[in-house]
Image 1 (tube, rainbow, N blue to C red):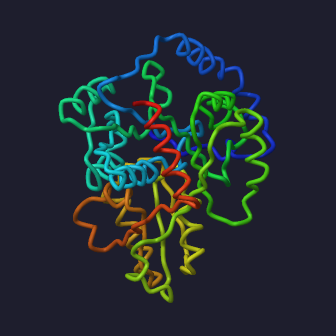
Image 2 (image 1 turned 90 degrees about the horizontal axis):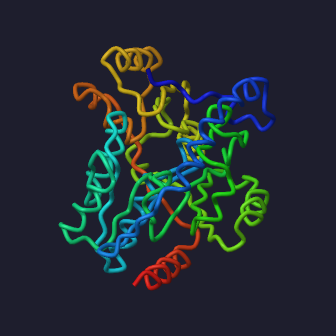
Image 3 (image 1 turned 30 degrees about the horizontal axis):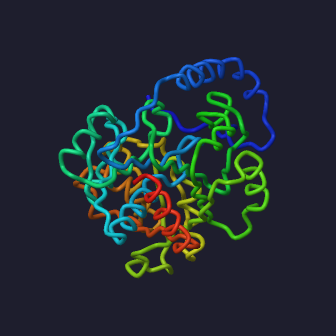
Length: 318
């Protein structure tokens, strides 16, 4: 059973559930300690990059991976995106496969070997920072500025896979912003206290296919992603009239009955339906003509700075 992310994970002031579950964080702590002693392997035949997160879900790893893929190609580098195969993440794998050269295997060592055989210059792993045996050449960690670190606790008390002090081991952060009023100064101060040398790149999302929508109409929206709030806020920013939002667990496997209920609601309210592109790939084929999805573009506030950062890191590798 796939469960929705608990709401108390994002409460700024922890409630009693946080403290009730706190003893169970010991298992995550032990796992992280053991992982830190695993010998690391650096690959000399190919460069490796990882785009991961500490906060579970909804930080924009996959759009960031694709953005970096396109940027590296502009820099005359031959990259490939990669993701360890998980049955419950078929949507992200399809998304990457449809938009880039892509490799997926049941372990990352096989991915590396395959990428070397196919003569790619660099692998961009979507997720995998917790794969401690790989010494990635470039390590990015993604955050959403509104969610930030939630209540700041480890799983299952909170949404963090590791303690924030691991930022000292990473090269750069992608900080996804939706609202201009996000408390970025607070976040920057927290980051700098842990790692004053880490680079931070602010990113935002824009709707690429907005011209296909009539914003005067009413819309019902649905999604099964890590951070459905960001999907809704993006639509509201673009003046969409949302009459109802329906959310499902991350990577939800839609059945006919789920989509039929949404279509019935839309028909009853003379509304159209919008979902995310990743959700659209999980909808049964016979319903796709009745549902629209957003195509999005990721933008970096200072792309030139990112290009220079990548050039510097790649030169250090060579």
